[in-house]
Length: 454
Image (cartoon, rainbow, N blue to C red):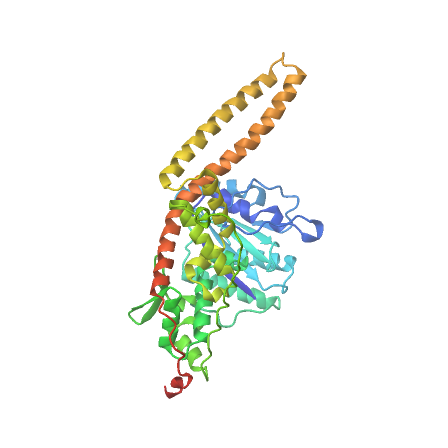
């Protein structure tokens, strides 16, 4: 079974070629023990030109792998078509443990020859994931000067050719492809890397709400408690989490999450299932001495904001992931970064964006002074009359300046990170506080038999 996809490349052509030919992803695992890098966004992933000795599964069609970039650019210049889309990047991903690297690469090369006979194509089979997959980098301009027309028909042709080749090699194929399961490449990469996405988070919350609902209205109410908003646009029901910019149609989440599918899943429940109670936090008694009022945290501004939000994230970790709102689920992935930024604010005792900006200017000036001193010391070290003792002193000082420079660079980046994240955290904190105020007192136990009269 193989899945396929192709999309346009509008960034630098070298980026996508370097990524596809990455030796760490294409080398034969039997001959190397190099740890493979995790997949990153292919359009932003820049690598130095790789050598070809270890690239056992990289081939070129109408071009040589080691000079593909120059050959593709030469073709564009020949026909005066250097603007617009630079290339097309596609993949063919196989089911785990179903195909060998040799067969996968052979199928990929045949697919490239059939789909793009007049184009320059790089075929690179990656072995860095459980699912072996081949990448295709296709020049947007063919050798005859025609541009590749990427449309639904060309994608359908790619899928049909891939399925036919898989059958020829005795591999399984997807018999009923999902029409509404199209994903952005970044989302596809995140899912294959085992990382949560905003769609997977919404699906988790919907599964949980469906499980404890007996009517569609109960499902909607359960989702609203989790911070979601529904909207009907024409015949489509749409949803978004508080904090998201746009609504998305339920059907875009998959076949199991359309409005009709949700109703059918709810109707399969024969009796209501009560939601599990959240465990009560254990109370601890601590004996203190002195005036307790003097130990209260009196932070304001950014320090208080980060302290409050980190506390919410820590609390969320103690409960099942269905029990806390969408905004917290997003930031649990960034918990370490938020914690580091909070420590940074406490260390420098800054509470406003203006103070962060001033601190950044101070740190940048210190870095300039440090670079000036480092340049002077390096020049002194190169002079003829400098003694060995003085050279040793310079070496020690340079080591200190390097370490201090790294610390300053890190703190400068943290200033930018705080300025960017603080606005988002402020809005999310407001949302959490509003949700807490809207929570009604616990109602009396509902009559379990009331559902059977529907």
